[in-house]
Image (cartoon, rainbow, N blue to C red; front, side):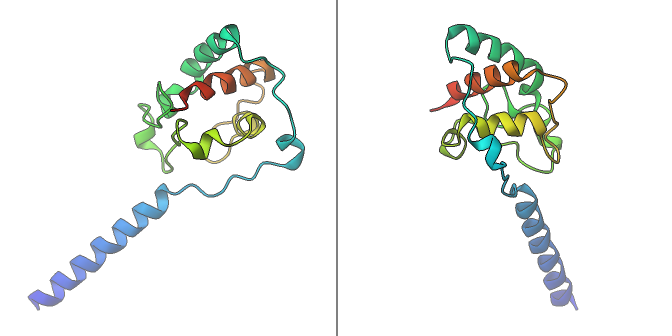
Length: 133
């Protein structure tokens, strides 16, 4: 009987770990073709990066972290890891991908359409590019 209880506990623990691992994986985020071809109209210069940093700190850092590592104060309470903006997986995406995802959001990622104007979203994208390692 003791062996049966140990086997049941081990099975339960294994299922819980698998469930947590799957919960942390973000599903692919498809960006519509009309957005993928957009070009960032905001020049990435000191002024736009500074403006983007202020907007990012106000709107994004609580989940994504001050340096884009996905370690913001609210990140622990999310079902899905908010992503590491310093990694190639993020940095190889085009600016339009990040613009779309920020503007329209999905699941736990809020949409900023109507809250932050398009030029400001592009400035945030310019700032997020500075997280590249």
